[in-house]
Image (cartoon, rainbow, N blue to C red; front, side, top):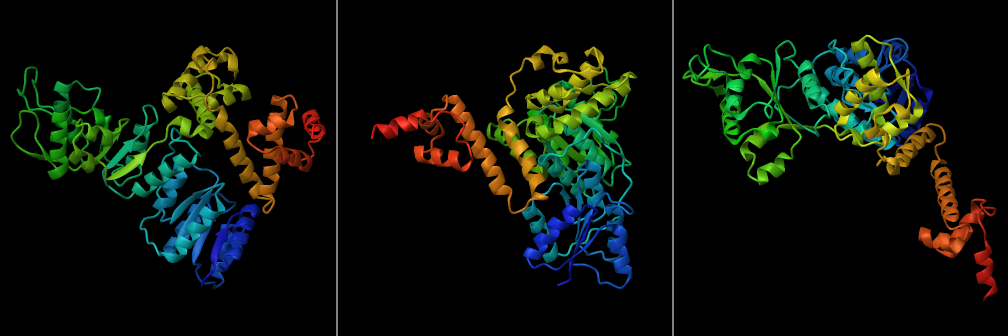
Length: 477
């Protein structure tokens, strides 16, 4: 089998992948830059079985390397790795023909699975990377957002109908605009309409237009949103709240591609891409008879689920900093920054309004916070006095980050090291809770008396807490 090529200027990443591939008996070759890999190829080396490349390196970037390899070896699977997990990178990678997009830090087993899939499958994707605009509003390094970025990338060469689901304020229209902007229809109109915000008796005219004299006040012919979006994308927001009669008309348009203006008699053909969005549970509304099942299946061709902000708390700091900078730019004032305490508090707060609520908060702070450093006391009372609900899960995020850090340099010792830390903290806090009484601490933890005694000795905690209850039991025997 031909070797797998690993191209990354980060020696630790190369080391981890080399050890993994070596353990699995997969031949490999590593390069510290795209220049090295290209020189090796120009020297007469055969094309690799799979190419793994970092996206940002000194010299040619991973995307440039992807393009060069795809021009010479169109069926070569290329996996793009990056520590800069943004939409632009994901879309560019997929548009360039990447087999997969792997954000760092990655799970070694996940990377190995991708490599095995790439080895066993030949994939050909046409098209070179396009110059695309930055979309800084769509930021995120959380795994759930990486899935959204992947979906947008895969949809970049498609015109399939898309259904975006997510809570209010989570950014569904931003995703819809990104899908359009990175699609073959990018030079055509993007027209958005909130179907829940238009009065029921006006919605039909808004969507399909009307002829002159169709109803009182219709003095001229008017184009509807379908006509305005011709050749481009029509975004139907809050589709779950669409009235039943309009659901029927929309289904007819999606079925045969024709519609009539209100008061019109000549059919019009539409060539628009539909992207619909809702915060509703459409399956539940179908079951309740509030949404047509046949329309649901027409819309639910490709589903993109947008996570709530509380599902991606690790993204709150970068979003908050971005929105502060954006607000300062819009108001033409000096930018502000968050203190660590304020930022930590925000990361633990549930934002029912999601990203929109965070953006509004940053705008409010840009206007109302007295100093350039936003302290915890500067937050509005409703947020400042909120008891964070995420504190219980924060330790899990911190643990995950520590595991990722240790895996890059202390493989083989991670489990033992972290297990000792975990047990030490657990027993220390239990002893503090019981005033040093070991039997009560063991009962509170749900472990045996002998177990806690042994653990205290193993972890060097003999000086922690009182052991009087143990001696008392021993003397009573």
